[in-house]
Length: 489
Image (cartoon, rainbow, N blue to C red):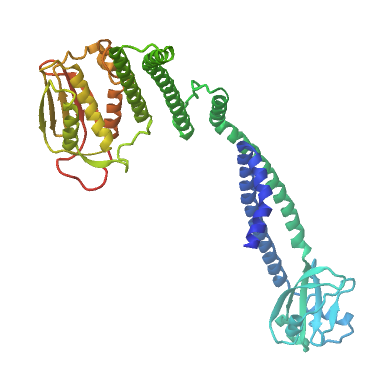
């Protein structure tokens, strides 16, 4: 663990430096590194293959060269070794540009005048003594030059009578010099390739990341000015274009959410102002009466206290509705949903509303229907719709509650809703001009819509068959209890 921590600390400055670079610079650096690795691999492979080929060619050349018996006899004479007379018909040829030396079985070296002797190895002596046919190895001359040596005992020297071996050698520089030149050439090509790749990488990154730069500029502008009207131009259908579209959709949703929030605050303030003003007026009258010592008539005092109680109840209801609307939406298919018997919910809601509509007749026709919903929210939604039906129904009229195949309809015999007002009935705080004198705050149907949508359903208001309004909630479900798992709605 200590070693890992040490390596992590050593790599930290590099990571910090890379993070300080722009994305374009990092892409250019990455391209340069990738090309450097690729070019280096190719260059090393080319150098190794060339070295192997040149070495093989040198070895092949050394093996193919043979010294004539006459030339070998001449070398032996220079060493004052008297060999048997050579065949005069044989040609005395000198195998240049190679270095040739004769090695006797006792290790004596015979070289041509002006040539530098090459140090004899054990493999050379083994060939001279007849223990092995040939030898190929690296050696050094007496002046320290690296040589490639091929030692053999040609059959044509057998008539010399003694054990001899002939070494044909050539400096290793004939291989190393071309290899060095090749290495410098490959290094230059690699350097040019890396620089070109880095330049091309930065250029490609600049062109490819231009939409990202626009997105960054737009994001910084929004963070600085909170201006959500900024849109990024969308060109094409690639990943960058999809990102720009998603960003534009996100800013549009945020702008709409902010507008709705501001509208909600303004509407809530407007709705709170009326009961608060009335409540303050009544309380001030009661306080003034107590301070002045002049008691209000009992009936007036009772009316003031009743009004105060009603206004407090209205404020509490409004605050409760606002809290309900401020809760995070439960997404359809969420694990927070529970299996609910919609017919039981409708029965409980009807029992609660009956107390407020004693002069009305209620008809209830319910089939079994099970849905996934938030039980409290769904029951409150049904109660709100029934409350509206009771509020607008004249005494002695009929309210019909039906549930069939997931379609819950609540029909009243009230005045109905004008067609031009239907698009607004589900808006928060919206109230029909004819209903502004009645109790309420305009949040009931907004709460209904929220609860029904959370269950994957929908709600609509239609003209009732016999006049009035029909509120229809359609929620997907089953006639029998489904498995204990919320559906993917």
